[in-house]
Each structure stands twice: as structure tokens, then as C-alpha cells.
Image 1: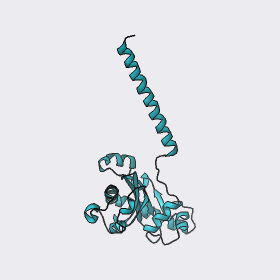
Image 2: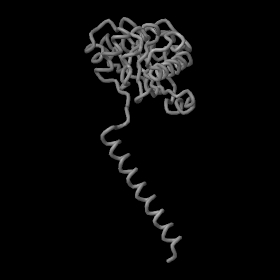
Image 3: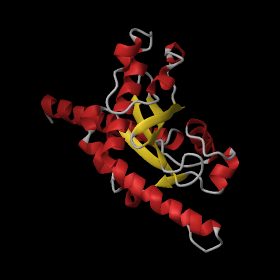
Image 4: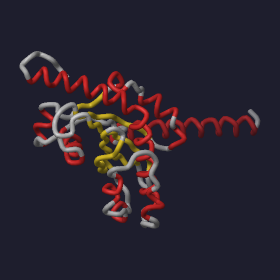
Length: 221
């Protein structure tokens, strides 16, 4: 066997070893660091109840379905396809929640994310007719997060459509984090404007179902 063939075989062997190691590393990462999946748990309901109050306690809001998670049948959007078609915006819509009853009945909450300096920043933004009524961070691990303006999410209240957080707050010392939040907010705002009517109609149907249910009939949200 000549030297060139031996070298070629060695190169193939090295590539195979590298591939095996990479697959093993990915498997370990998926095992110990699984992909984030949005869910309506008690912690999420508590955050939503803070930015878009239902008028009842966090526990009651969760247990009695003052806050619900909407599916594609409710807002008419396949989120995977939506995110793929908006890949250039470097943000994603992760979930949509609604409040079919309570103090802010017909409001809805969009969970969106974008990658900052140290990973994904996940935010919750509450809307009424596509206008922001409250917002908060749900998940982040940014090194410089405490450098962001304390009034950042308060500033968003009353906004609709594109916002420019960089122009509003200038240099913060957390530019990458601020840019990520800006991208997530703008995609969320665009989604709210585009699908506001569909979500509102869904909320109306759910409110009717909730009212009927409270009268003692077996109707499930």
C-alpha cells in the first residue's frame, strides 16, 4: 500500500472519529440541556398575571383557566412555518396565550425570543388589540443583563409596530442583549398586528364558553 493511500485512510479515520465525538457531545447536550419548550405552567401564569392582571390570584388564574395556551387552531398560525418564513429577522414566536375572562378579558400574550450575548432571551408581551399593555422577561442568562435600563419594559407599554430601543436608550453597556430584545419585540408586534383579529375572535369564543361553563353547563375551554 503506497503512502498516499495510507494518508488518505488516516484522514478518513480522523474524520470518522471527529464525527463520532461530535455526535456524542450533541447527545450529551440534548440529555442535560434539552431545547427550551414553552409551556403554560404555574410560573408562566404568574408572570402573565403580573403584566396582564386577570383580577384573581395567580393560583386561581391558573386553575380556573383565566389564562390559557392557544394552539394553531385558535390563532390560525403554524408557528414553525411562521418562524422559518421570518428567519431573517433573527427572532422567533414561541407561544401565544390568551385571557378569555377576567379583568383583561380578550387580551393575549405572545412569548418570543432572540439570541443575545450568552443565549436566548425569552420575553412575554401582553396585548390588547395589538397594543402592548405589559411586558416582562421570562428567561435569560445574559452576563450584562443588569446593565439594561430598569424602565425598558415600561417603555414598551402603549407601543404597537416596530420600536427602536437603541435609539431610545442609547449606549447601555448591554448592546447585544438590548438588540436581542428589540428583535423579539418587533417580531412579536408584527405577529400581534397581523393576527389580532383571529386571536380576538378566538378569545370571544372562549369567553362565551367560559360564561356558559360558569352557569353550570359542561363546556370545556
